[in-house]
Image (cartoon, one colour):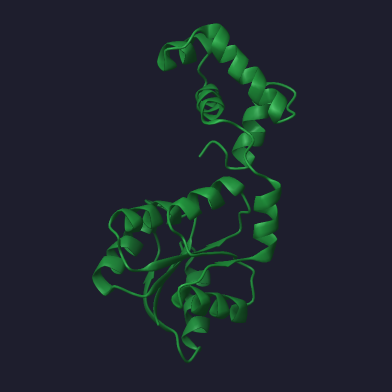
Length: 200
């Protein structure tokens, strides 16, 4: 199977590519240091799989996955991450990502995951799967929207104008969000939601 490795840390990218290349049935055909470069390489080389980091300059791994889904590209995406945020996982699943693994997984585990994905299956690190089931996003879309605007520094009045709601309704959404997240106040709620990737 032909694979592209996209990772912004040069040393990790090189090591990962070298280790995958040692596998008999895996050939690393390209390496990218950012999301934009990864997308261009995928379009040019048409690999079977792309192993990608989430957080990369120019375009994140999830941005690239969404673009590929939009283009109905045949390349399957496997995300390697240090983050166990359920917001990322939910977005990855919507973008058609086939694998979601931790960066510190052993190389034979990654090789096995790539073979599973290549054969049409899905592969998710058990540690990540547990975190995602445990931390389901409790906020409604509207609560997320209001909290996101509050995080950007808007007052309840500003948010109300922007969303065509009354200031009272906005305050209700904020207090609902604070309650659901078991937060002390608005700032605490924003911190909890951001940490879990629920405002992305």
